[in-house]
Amino acid sequence: MSERSRPMAGVFRNRGAIICAVMIVELIALVVVHQFFVTFDCGETADFRTCQFLQSLVARSLVMVAAFGVLVWARPAIFRDFVQSAGTATGGAWMWVHLTGLVLLWLPLLLAGPDGLVAFFHRASWFWGAGAALASVGGALWIAPGAAWAKMLRNERFMPLIVLMLAALVPDLADELLPLWDWQAITTATFAAVYWLLSVFSSQTFADPAAYIIGVDSFAVHIARQCSGIEGVALVTAFVCLYALMFRKDIRFPHYWLVVLPVAIMLSLLLNIVRIAVLVLIGARISPELAVNGFHSYAGWLFFTLLALGIVYGLQKVRWLHRDPTLLDRAAPLQGDPVAAQILPFVVFMLSSVIAQALFPHPALGYPLVAISLAGAAWYFRDQLRALSWQLDLVGLSAGALVGLAWVLLADTSGESGALTDALDGLSPLLLTIWVIARLTGTVLLVPLIEEMFFRGYVLQRIDRGGLALRILAIAVSSLLFAALHGRWVAAGLAGLVFALVMLRRGKVGDAVQSHLAANLVVALWALAQFDFALI
Image (tube, rainbow, N blue to C red; front, top):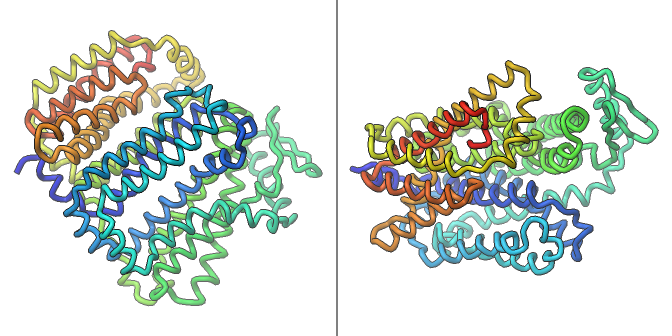
């Protein structure tokens, strides 16, 4: 059995995880570009409410994906029949519907550019609405026929749909509860706790208790009632209720509500205190713009979502909360699924990149975080990676070296090198050494492995089902998606084309990994020699 056919045998296992992973990759790409490179205030547009709703889709999507992940993890039996039905589906026509939706989602940015979306906003909202509908419906029906979805929903009394709808409304719940969240004691306690925490890290902390203004050095924030943690309380409460719904037959009442909900709310309030303190320190010591426009906007929902998932995971370990603790280990592990090994590490790559964008003044400074995340994902799926054929491929290595050389010769990083060099100059010698080691390790070893497993191992093989037309389509789609991930579209697209041809030559993903590794090694050595890490 060839390496290409072996992963396809398990392509529909853990279908719920695959659905989430594919949607996350597309969502993250949209979020990164539109939230970090397209910056305008909703007040500048002609349709304030529509703009606010579109901005809220980030938080809604985070909560929906997390809720669906909990549903799949806690109740894997829900998707057993669905997986069997989905495994027989081709869905070629729906693939084009999905891709059309993606094109519509990206079209306003391509037509108007990052600076022209304000004037183009009213028309762009129609593109975004139609694109979201087509991408969602097309993607769902590409994965499985409508009959499979309907059967699964009927068998579960539409619980998955209800869970997703309720998850999407959590941000609205937080807004509706805000008028009731006028508890001065909580605001005062939050203010005092933030001041104490900041005082531990800075002697320049100042506060105006009457106006609820607190800051460090010249940067200050106003702790209003909405800063007292209503989003986190609403989110963890929703996930505590979701867990109770999933395991309602196993949970011991009233133990669960008397202990779990108060503890979850307390953890949420503590995390909110840490979040505000970190925001102030980022604004004072790193970048006020980053604190207000990046960390303040996205870190809250991201961190509260991770806390909610951590609480749900921890509940599985507290055996006295359940009537039958032996039922807690029923979820099937993902480590043995070859398709999960192709997709989930790439999702980790995208998520860690978004976090680095939000937390660091120059995104590249967060690369050690990205490298650690990639290493953890690769280690988790190490058995699947070992199963690949790693026979030396001199043709692939040579082709990769040529790709790397072309990437260096055609590069123009003059606009990026200065900003990155200035950011690196601010690091101590020890931190700079750690950063360089992480950057080289990630670029040369981890990124080629993670990207090739996804683009060539999953995307290309998912489309290439036989026949010249589908093979050409598979090469084109995988190369275009690869190009979209990199700043230099033409050069990256040609590199993706080379890696695809190398993989198809012997039908081994390991060959594409070797070729990509050789290309990145050439670029990394040049970048190290010139100390110009904007190349990689």
